[in-house]
Amino acid sequence: MHQPMAGIRMVEVAQFTFTPAAGGILAEWGADVIKVEHAVAGDAQRGMVNHPKDGTFQPIMDHPNRGKRSIGLDLATPAGYDVLLELCRDADIFLTNFLPAARRRLRLDVDDIRKANPDIIFVRGSAHGQRGPWAEKGGYDGSAFWCRMGSAWGVTPPESPRVVSMPAGAYGDSMGAMTIAGGIAAALYGRATTGQPSVVDVSLMSVGAWAFGLDLGNAALTGAAKEPVPLNQTMMNVALNPTVGHFRTSDGRWINFTMPQAFRYFPDVCRHLGLDHLVTDERFDTAQKLMANSAEAGRYIADAIAEKPYAHWIDHLQTMEGPWAPVQGPLDILDDPQMHANGYLSTFPDSEGKERSLVANPVQFDNLPPDTRRAPQFAEHTDDLLRELGHTDEQIIQMKIDGAVT
Image 1 (tube, rainbow, N blue to C red):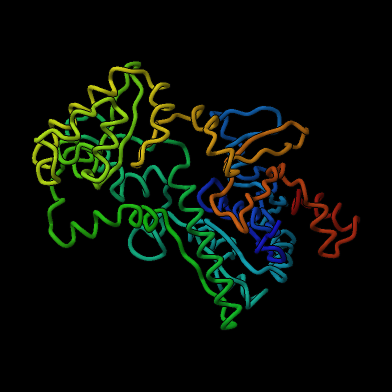
Image 2 (tube, rainbow, N blue to C red):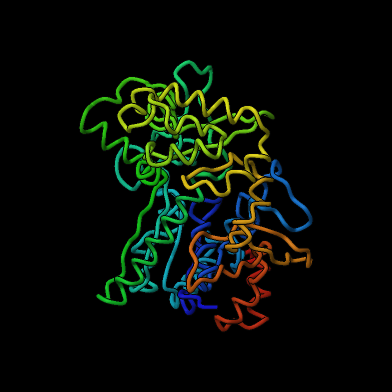
């Protein structure tokens, strides 16, 4: 299969998910991604015992680190740091999410890395960006992406006793990683056409603001979003559009309709719901009347869907013209035939030969899904990488004795 990043090498000094997952994406696109881990502790995420694990397979590590090679280095030692610079000399990209203080202490800033390779593309993932009073502070997607940038505000009803949390782990991290990967691709193109290597920055705040960008633009224009408004009032309320909303089935599940062009789709919706008589009803027979009586029309739709179970509607609505969706949980998604038809779920062997599954990165080339491979075990490729750099076995043993490598 075509892998557009084949021949590209990335050196990654990063932990957790937001930034490392960008390396995982590039690995699926064909790049050789070398994950530099602490010589003793490895990536701090390896120790998160509150996540499921089976043998060597742990989704919290395999999701962001698929397809990479791992080397254990103590960057605080001269020998360990020298190996890092050796790796960077032939690399195209250096990727890090270390905080500024750690970058300064370990000599991982732009000027430090470019002493080894002036042409390397330098990429930073951060919580709050590189400037301003919060530039030195760390953060996670639950804080900088979700809460600070409006998503939590947007999904939490004013009367709620708690703030609604992200719907899934690493939710903002995974979207942010895709953004980093896109920035890297653009930087590689820019270097190829101009000869100039870029410094690429993506923060959880910038990704969160982009995700919330339409409402931020509207608020900047009108000042109308200064006070809390009801949950999704402008998008998911049949009082405004009878064919936009969440409708409960007889067994307590949900079906979503998202048909902004209500009058176009209303007749077909009615026929699918056994409401044929409403198509010619004088209350709904023009677009203006349908909007004026949208709450009433929405009640008809809600009552009809409430009469039958979720499974009935999943089957029965397949021929409906307007956009709709089942409200699905993780097990539903894993069984979704559309996921499998498009190769959105990858299956691969782990280090013990067991078949595992992960979501593939969302970009496909030439109509083929990516080739997903497992994440490396901690420092799994240290010896191979050191040999590739020209170190002898005796030198490798000595570096291990000195604690420079694992």
